[in-house]
Length: 196
Image 1 (tube, rainbow, N blue to C red):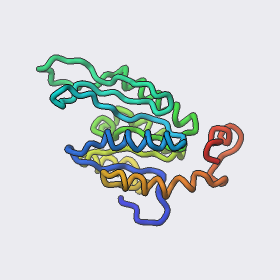
Image 2: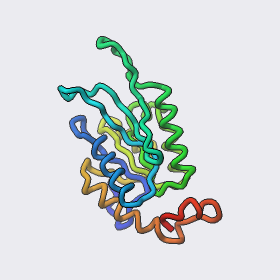
Image 3: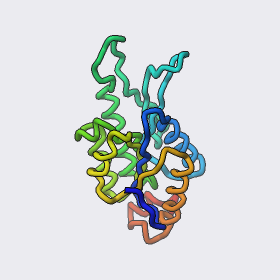
Image 4: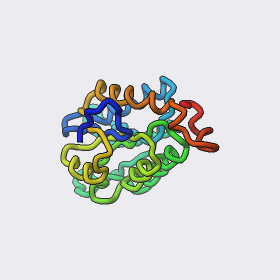
């Protein structure tokens, strides 16, 4: 669903087409928010390209540590199987879990795509962030939008693939995170000290 109410929902998905560079868009937004002092956690994707502009490697960047996590397997040029590395995906799942447990003001997960739509990938980590009540931003390819809607129900906003749309959503949500009523007690208050 696309939210038209004045209060921004805590969950937002950028719905994108195959020719959109959603990875760069999401990473630029996340790094700009980190530079502004917002407490973000989770992962964004960095694509490594050759001189001709062809994607040759994929990394996920842990927003809490800045560490790059390799998620590509080097397969032969004729390989037709999935290029995702299981070890890298497991490490990226831990990065999301740390963000949720560490009280990130915003959890970013690079994509809800075909793996998550089929019940695999980072689907459990998406659920973990949602159940914990953490604000969540992700990207969803158009072909997986129905699976995303089924997964979250009426809980989120759908954003066009534009920086302005993401900034508008965050601007509507961030002030609510700074309100004392949104903070927990004890350890949770300590985890939120940068925004409360």
